Length: 256
Ligand SMILES: Nc1ccn([C@H]2C[C@H](O)[C@@H](COP(=O)(O)OP(=O)(O)OP(=O)(O)O)O2)c(=O)n1
Image (cartoon, rainbow, N blue to C red; front, side, top):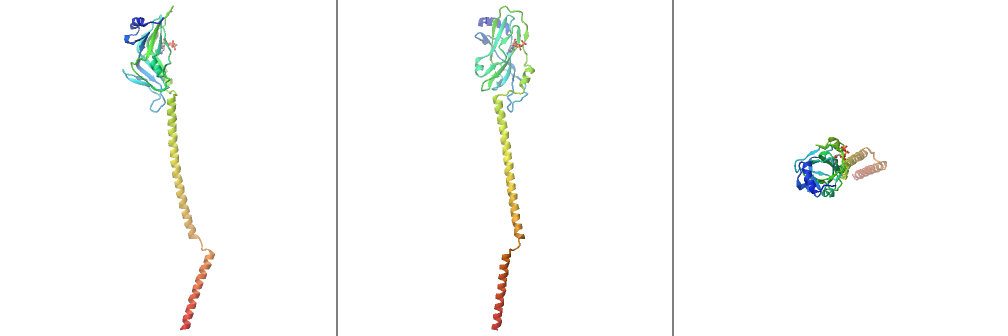
């Protein structure tokens, strides 16, 4: 049988040292974001791949971008008696934003310590959270004919062996979009540079060809001998000029 609010109010002060009656929510108790979180890298520029866990001061915020995975350690230490079982979940308002609880839904009999939620943002936008935000719920239920429970101690910190595999980044749509834009920009820059180089080369070749052509034409003009037909005309003209001069001189002599 699940514990109702009266049973929770009676039992929880012994099981949750930081118990506060205001956190009772129907037949559940609200748990909050603790001091240590880790969010997987997006692969976008400025978001380091080997990012470290974040230590949150009271009220400090952090975001889980769309398509990213996060580990959140709860603020509260909880205990589950040997003859009980607890169920855990994310509050609906956070689920509506896309935050999904990946890490399981039960806490074993005999468990003691902080809970470690692994969450995934399946929504289209970043989910903003902050320390002490009451995001999670826990329900308690009695077990019938429970055997002896094994004591299980929760994590005091987010272990590195859990965050390590996420450091390479998760291929989210946002990350892929950023990579595509980055590649597109690089390609555009490269094409612009090539076009500029090609234009300079074109001008260079054009200029060189013009200079060569001019020099070639000049050279042809200097070296070319006068054509034969032209030489005959020149010779005739000079001959007739000589004849005319001679005739004139003769008539002048005769007159004298
Ligand atoms: N979000 C969660 C879910 C569970 N737990 C704790 C409470 C559970 O009692 C304990 C073990 O959970 P499971 O039995 O589901 O996990 P494993 O079988 O992998 O661990 P173990 O081998 O310790 O049983 O982990 C937790 O800290 N945070």
